[in-house]
Image: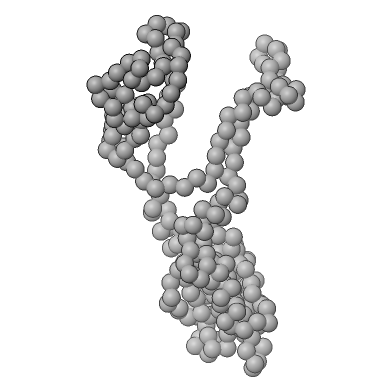
Length: 243
């Protein structure tokens, strides 16, 4: 049996059925023929695992980090060494392990967005809550309430982005959607007139009004629900190291 990539791959190295012996520049079908030419290399759904024979499961993934074994290439050049248990000087074996912020942001943007902007998962959002102040033209109650709520949220350990700019509601709401924090809290005269603070999940159109004295607890409860939802989607994968 021959993999279907072999006929299109010239001058390959092949085994010679002898220990430490190889054949160079082998070509199919000049040097050998096969009874079957098919895809042997690519794994597919249901194929047997080469380690445990269980059926393989396929799922879509995205690369957010990478690992490179650098060996001693750079440690040799830099003279980076260590003393082993026998007191002998040896070059350090190096590795590169990275999760790039730019790569992570690109992956989040690709998977979590809508026509208005980002929709950050709560587990990786730069801020958990986007607090929006709409001052209005009346009393300073909205600003005082927003300042107080901002302090209370921070004291509760909640990460908050506070928008207290002198901009129109439309500009502030559009910016909040563009940034995409999981929860938006809006302090305005209208919300206060309804008895509290307006809360909206970034991914949903519906809004609710939290009573002022329950605003922090209600926000915390909503965050915990978002975190629990993500945890419920995690599929544990056992990592086996075969030596």
